[in-house]
Length: 106
Image (cartoon, rainbow, N blue to C red; front, side):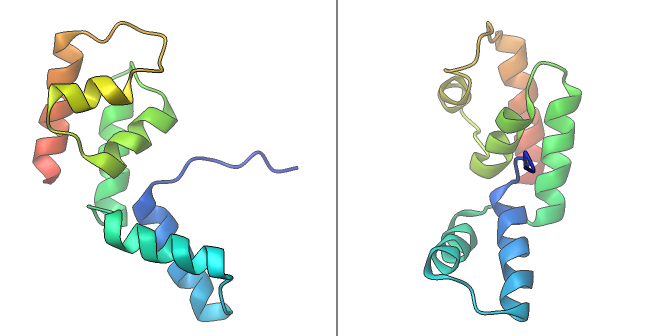
């Protein structure tokens, strides 16, 4: 069985858009496509760039980096909320690094 991978909302929307050109989507897939279209703040390319830059910081996992690209948090409290389930101490410098990346793409 394929384990799968995490994708950003922008990437999910692109995948669903391409699939909808080939066949009719199920109601759940159409709902996901609509949601991604409304909520995604970045293009697929910019979303990938944010994920790459956040991962390059060296203290985030794939799923956290993608969550940051989806939410685009620009307040320390929002970043702390994203990291709340992670088993690490989030330093002030880490928060500032993430905000610096996010602000470039807003």
